[in-house]
Image (cartoon, rainbow, N blue to C red; front, top):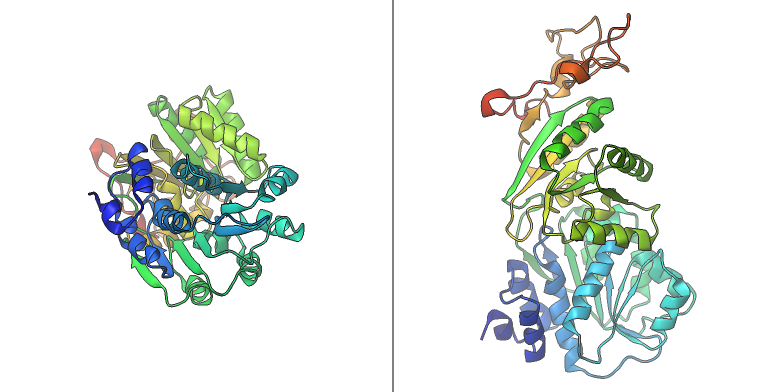
Length: 439
């Protein structure tokens, strides 16, 4: 008898787990599942990639299997809310694989797909509905789905739902659910607002925590390059060129910027794709599948890809632009070093991103090792050497720590311009100064 059987999960579900290669629970699963099987509300705190989907999915399935009564027309027995389409689809796919061969029905409703087709699937009743809040509200407005008989609610990656502004949607949805229900909330961080949400949605919950906020996988090697914004693309291509056969995920801030960067990489000879909010769901799904299969080697994305996506072979994560929300950095780099593998997380920091870097290091309680350049504030010190008569940071045209060699001289030679400052590499295998010296 394995641990899953000892928890009290039904034999048919344990058998399906074995068939999918899962034989031992992760720490979050070991601690959350027994409480959830007892019908208690659960608040789970764990870093990304720790198996949270099964932590709430297995007890949810087990309890629904124990009551074989089919849902009535348009009704939902179990509702799972997720912040992004990609995460919602991954949850639905995982649960659908576990109920294969049973009468149970898992439905997925997200934006970017035909709402009429989704309404048609919901008409026959749903055992488990996985949804993004916005699309669920659209279907509720059409009276295509009812939540008054829903017995289970799961909020996955709840902190990101708050970051994305779903708080009002969550309140409205919760108001349509029965007061007597089991609620499970899973998050990677627990700030003041999350605590307020937990108090409002959960009834005397069991708190389960397996890792402190801001902690990343032990096998992720991190580094930061202090570099002028205009030179980031050249450095990215330089670094990508060293690992052409390995999968790399590149994060940017904006939809337009990610699309532009992807096209630049394609012109440079890389098999690249992109996912962001301007892509249809079909385009996003095809890009992710091509990335998983290795058909494309570089995927450029906004933070829609920062959470929940499980692509075990991602070797490198590049923070081409640092996130505004420091916790998102943790989730971004959690896309590598999955399933016990090694991975590397490389950050690019321009002068106007120093505050973001400080916030990231504060959340993580570490100093990210410097791969090249110097922290930008150090260049503003009164005794800092000046270059070409320019300001310490180079002003609007000035370069940063990067820019030596032939590429550093591009466009140079014109009178009256400030030359980019030499990017200092740590020679002889030694690392540069800690980023926290100025951050």
